[in-house]
Length: 393
Image 1: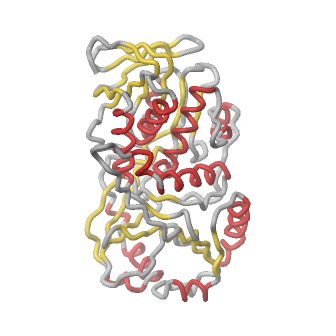
Image 2: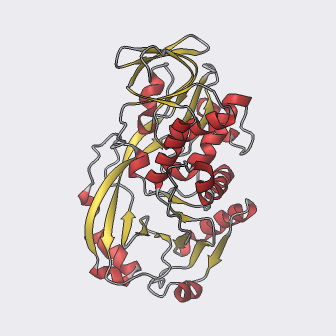
Image 3: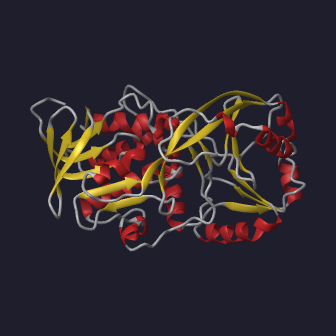
């Protein structure tokens, strides 16, 4: 960005997948709009967009999340058409083997309730008895399982960092500017934000501001005196090798809380963290890999008795501590300040839909393609949490 350019129609704080998707949609829907992304970590070393396990599911219990996933899977299937550049094609490696939630007897009624909500919302899901699970997945031990819920289509995983880079590059090809700098302050009146202050000493005047700061969104929000209950919540992912291939392996959610899925010739797995303080260093917590965890994996998948832990990494969920769901849309008083935050572990799959919803809200006064009003900031003010029946990790 040239040094004399001191204003933008829209300033987006953060150019991870949410900021990049919003910028892409804004400039696609309104070509010529002057959009500037401000990003301090242009190598995305700490970004959730780089460290996500990048999976997508329809098996939510809040219909708004199902709608975002339905839009998301359709977008991912056609990503080449949406995001490729003349010099660069898009390869997201989308695979759709489904999510499989396993339930023990005491969890069956919750699984059945979730199933009804999902079917009503048009999700392609099926409940499977233990015998059907054995036939489909002979490597899986279901002796203590009463029921499974499997996504038959529209669920799986993809290359999240590739999606992020595709949004970013295409947005920049559409004229979006990316500024390598850090937002250190927001200048505001009682009704609006007027400018963004940068660590380099510069100031950007702006028509609208988007908080897309991921795990650090709470820190950015405080710059306007607004409390946003979003914190960096560390999650560790372990990379495992298994001597036996697990045919048609879905993303598996065990009744004890861990998850596992294939990643190339390896498997990746994670569980509820043992340490939950916000903002822990981005280093794997090896204490989460213990005899109990190994035993639980080997119980469910006997072939994993001979697994090896190859490596591990840690990333941040941008955790909305209020209700573990996203905050999308404008602030009720600072009306040109918009949020796209707090996805709490399901951001990558919802980025395409959330970015569109926010761009429409900014340009037209409301989201039009996907109804997301219930994810608005108002619920925080009114203390109306929107909760999933089952939160993963």
